[in-house]
Image (tube, rainbow, N blue to C red; front, top):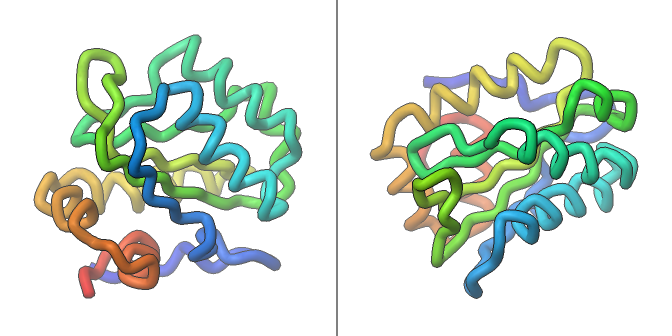
Length: 154
């Protein structure tokens, strides 16, 4: 499977520096803060968007299954998106999230209709637990980046 929605206007949808391995246990709030702060630092969103990511998870859990949580902002938070982007935190210890274990946290800021395209492409990858397990074995950020942006394992 090959797709390339990950080319956007001025910034790539996923920068390699926006992929982090987290080796120590963290909370849900810290995970949301981590992926949100990467989006802010890279210029995809303003700081207010991170608060809306926390609000969104409080309204309805952003854990979607297969070890994956996708924090994103509320509808009101969309005004704080400068450009579509994603950030990735891979957790060695996982987090209990809605009664399940989350090991992959992907922060999403989708401008306009790009939000649904991003989710559709991520669901293609993460709908298969074998892909999740393969991703969690990858240590090299370049391989992780390639897998998430193309759906192809290196």
